[in-house]
Length: 157
Image: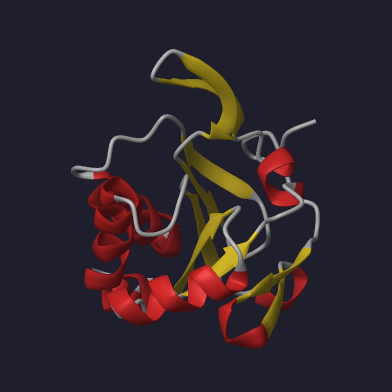
């Protein structure tokens, strides 16, 4: 069962870049953006990550932490993060536990072949651990600005 809007997100602990374990409970008091993307080092995912990178200070000013999530390995994440200069952590969700929690694994088609992949999606969790906004089937242009505006607005309330 996926997390519903305006309900608490169940606590989770996942492994992120920098050898860091991230648990939602430890992040209480800060807003959290979790963005899911299909694959490291692909054009759309790189552009999306760069958008969050370029607005990192504005998110920090809005008391908001950003985490990127895909099924790639931590090693691939570390390389992607270093290459792009991302100031936020990337989470490796090899077992798809976070993907299932947020219901982002969807049937996709590539060259006529069907497979299960990550639907580019972003979630904004408030400082009390409640899911306040979600964007599914994200198109990269303008998306980071929309998430930032929502984070800034939520931080003021």
